[in-house]
Image 1 (cartoon, rainbow, N blue to C red):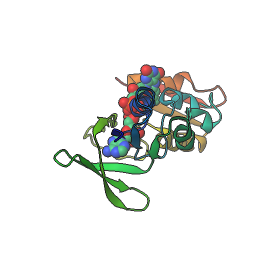
Image 2: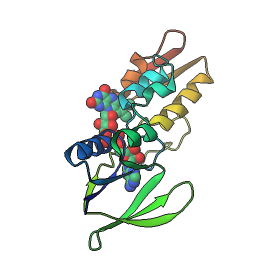
Image 3: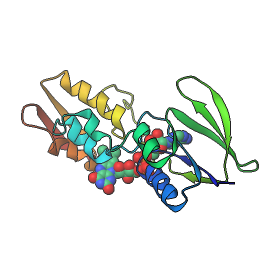
Image 4: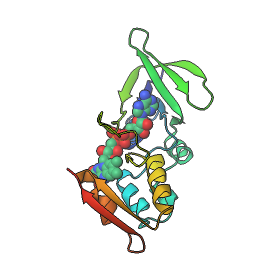
Length: 180
Ligand SMILES: Cc1cc2nc3c(=O)[nH]c(=O)nc-3n(C[C@H](O)[C@H](O)[C@H](O)COP(=O)(O)OP(=O)(O)OC[C@H]3O[C@@H](n4cnc5c(N)ncnc54)[C@H](O)[C@@H]3O)c2cc1C
């Protein structure tokens, strides 16, 4: 029986693990669950996309689920969130976020690569629609749409995100202040 490997998370860690698993074992059954729409995208390019240095949104996509599936023979399931792990029965419970379908999938081995969530500290005003976080492509779409509606804007940025300012092209005036 081929080994059945499940991977939770489809960006840098998950996609790398999936490709490596295929190289190590050509017979393994590998299923990758990603709750978002995209796998293996260029996180580091997001600020440059917002700043229009990267003009084409598709250039952020290192690969697509279909291309990855074809190249590595890996079952890629997007919009699929793993909501529980049953270590006794060696199964995960999955919900398809578009259809609501729920099912269980058994495994021999399980790799967790769920990344991290942006921290939203419990501060007054934190729910303002002018406070954004930047972690994935939908986040960058929201920021870009906000900026595209305006000729100029100012932004306060925690330090690592300061690259949004660095990548901002000259045609749009974006004043940035690093706040911590
Ligand atoms: C704007 C930005 C710029 C960056 N620039 C650089 C850089 O220049 N150089 C550098 O080295 N690093 C950079 N990084 C950091 C780098 O992108 C991250 O370290 C890397 O993406 C982490 O990969 P990951 O796979 O561990 O997690 P993530 O990229 O967070 O991916 C985890 C995935 O798991 C999915 N997931 C989570 N839970 C579940 C679940 N229960 N079921 C299904 N799916 C789930 C999430 O939807 C997510 O897509 C940058 C990050 C950002 C946000």
